[in-house]
Length: 149
Image 1 (cartoon, rainbow, N blue to C red):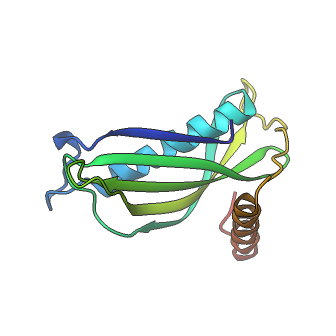
Image 2: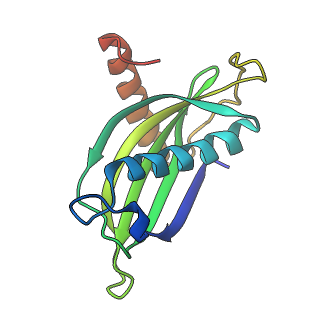
């Protein structure tokens, strides 16, 4: 499976001091969706190696329906670059808006934490190919800057 979407309601327990969903909670959701996507692709345990370019576009309100979509964008030998987009909206209005997006890298590991190879991902559509190119460009830029795993 190369993508997964988690859906749930933003609960009052996730509120920050401003009355909206806490950014750390959104980051946790991103990590969970990314883990589910990576693990389903690798068919084994995966660990988060890098989260980059996280962008918060707008707040998530308590009571909103939230969608966290994680899509495999690019694979290395042992790593999976996953694009994650968070959307939310009031269920009465029916429209969902992008709230957050980022790129996250997971590594497939054995029981001792050593990296294991993953099956290469081959994008099949023009949209998937464009996403793979963006992920690879971001990864190359991060490596050049010395900030990637």
